[in-house]
Amino acid sequence: MTTLVFTHPECRLHDMGRGHPECGARLDAITDHLRATGLDTALTFREAPLVDRPTLCLAHSENYVNELDDVLAELETNGEHHAFDPDTIACAHTRRAVQRAAGAAVAATEAVVRGEAKAAFCAIRPPGHHATRDTAMGFCFYNNVAVAARHALDVMGIQRVAIVDFDVHHGNGTEDIVAGDDRILMVSFFQHPLYPGTGSSPMGPNMVNLPVPPYTRGPEIRKLIEAHWLPRLEAYKPEMIFISAGFDAHREDELGQLGLVEADYEWITQRIKELAARHAQGRIVSCLEGGYNLSALARSVAAHLRVLADV
Image (cartoon, rainbow, N blue to C red; front, side, top):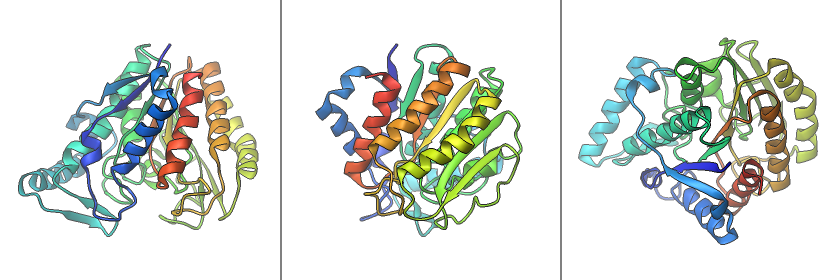
C-alpha cells in the first residue's frame, strides 16, 4: 500500500521576510531531493485541502481562531505584514498557507483512518507545534498535529492516539493543548535550554518529556527513546500515531546544537513504525515541523519517508 504525501503550492508562498530560516525553499529542497533520488515514484501525492473553522476549534479556542483569521484575511486584502512576535510574521499569503497546512494534516488523518494508506506525510509549512491553544508563536499559527489528533479522536472514532515529537525545540504548543487529555500520549525529546525554554516539567501525566543538553548525539538519544518512550508507548497501545517531524536536531542545522544524522531519523521512524504495526494497524500521520539546513532537511525527510514507504 502506497504512502501518501499531502502538500500544496500555497504553503510555499507564506513569507516571513528575507533571510528568515522558515522559508518556502524548505519545501523546494524536499521536493527536489525526492525527484532527484527517484523516491517520489514510490509515493502518491495529493493536494492539501483548506481546513474549516470548526475543525481548528477542536484544538484552538474559538476566539483565537476567529481573531487570527480576521487578521490574516485583512493582510490578504491589503498586502501588508503583521508580526505576532519577532520571529512569527504573517503576509498576504499566510492565510491560505496555514489553512492548507492544517487541512493537509486533517486530510491525511482521514485517508489513513479510512484505509487508503497506512502512512501519510504532510510536506507543509508553516509548522505548528509551538502554536498554543490561543497564541501564535515560534513560526507557528495553527497546531497542525494537535488539530489532526483531535480530529481523529472527536470525529473519526479513534480512542487513543500518540504524538511523537522529535523536533530540536520543545513542542510547547502541543503540550499546552493536549496535556491532561488521557486519550493522547505525547512523547518528545528536545534540546534544553533552547527556545521556547519549556518542557523540563511536564504539564500532565500523559507527557513524556526528555530534555537533553546541547551536543547530545544520536546514540544517546536512541538509548533515551528505548528507556523512556518505548515502554510508555507499548503500555499505552495507541490506535494511531502522529509525528511532529522536525529535522532541526540534525548536526548540520544551526538553529540547534544536537548531533543527529539521517540514520538516527531512520532508526526513530522504524521504531515508531514497528509500534504502529503492533497496536495501530500501521496507522501513522507525520507532519513537517522544523529543519532549516536545506540539504540536511531534504536528506532527513527522505530517510524518514523510505521507512514509512518500505523502500
